Length: 242
Image (tube, rainbow, N blue to C red; front, side):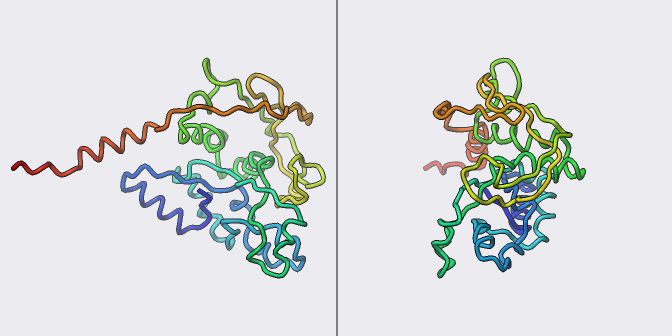
């Protein structure tokens, strides 16, 4: 989780080349933002970017994109964890006390589409896999989630590849006073969102209802566990008969 360096991508790639079922996830922020944000002369803006894993030197971003393109990284996230300015200020005199975390869940799909599909780094099919299908499979929720078919939950995002918006803390719906993508104009937005067959977002109108979510029961072990058990059985040394 939160793979942010070339070294980590290389380790995952090596393991997969050896046949190991290893999965990797990277954050949207690490794909776009580098560690220069920590040199900001405004302490508040620098502190607002403090998170784990921290933002890295720009060279690592290319490795993350290559990881997504090659299939060695299978999913994306944001590690959404909001702290406002007064909370970040807890570390004003000791940076180790700055609470770690940034927001981003509201903007993840848009920035990934804008920086991935619009630049030719990813295809629309890869976008769907990285943001939905692969994740559902890893967490043993597929095909209930991650697919549009009979029997699946009616969770659908209607995507407008030509729609635009400018990201800002003044207009986002996240309960935080800072946005790490502040001022970025993206092309490609969610026009409508349906959850469990109900509109929760429609042309800028947020209709989500507090308490509407529910816990999803799921089998404890994805198919990969059966695979690992079979491999272990086949590779185990034969018992010595006495």
